Length: 209
Image 1 (spheres, one colour):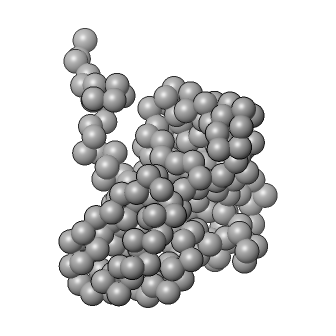
Image 2 (cartoon, one colour; image 1 turned 90 degrees about the vertical axis):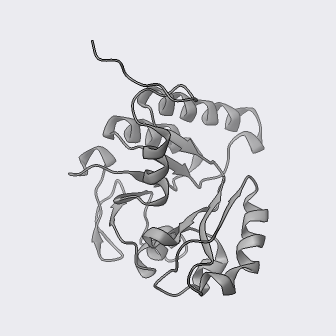
Image 3 (tube, one colour; image 1 turned 135 degrees about the vertical axis):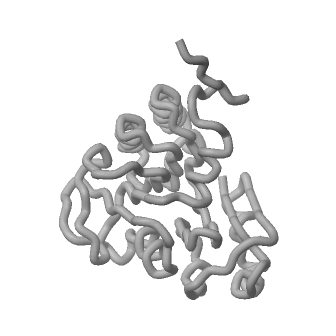
């Protein structure tokens, strides 16, 4: 039997370096809950508009064309490995979405949806269900109720923060990285550094947990 390494958080298999690369330099990103509605589709539009270096996949159970992409109805049906899933579905659907990510072998799932423990017992249970599904499949879980991630090194703008609308491609890379437990504080810092984002070598990545 071959020994399998277990990292410090207890996940078997991929190293911490591997899942970190899947987060900040993913080859393929799926937006679970992609929408053609202009008021709901900011994640996918930002991803495409700002020149993500990898492949973007729209996931919507109704299918159709969303921002020029043919939507896949289930993440399990994506025909190539997905490194990062940006999950933007109503809270009640998040555990099923994470189950799909686990079944599909997604390395990292980033939940931007709200409506979990911050709203009480029912939300806390949904959050716990999502964690269980992620643990079952070895999926690294970030969120919920998050502003998302920006990683200039891969042109990744997987964020719903309003200032992202002011960014222009290409994003510039390296220098200062920001990881914030608070979405509000992360957005405040990001807004303050917006001018630096547009200059080479100043600000990357930004992650709001």
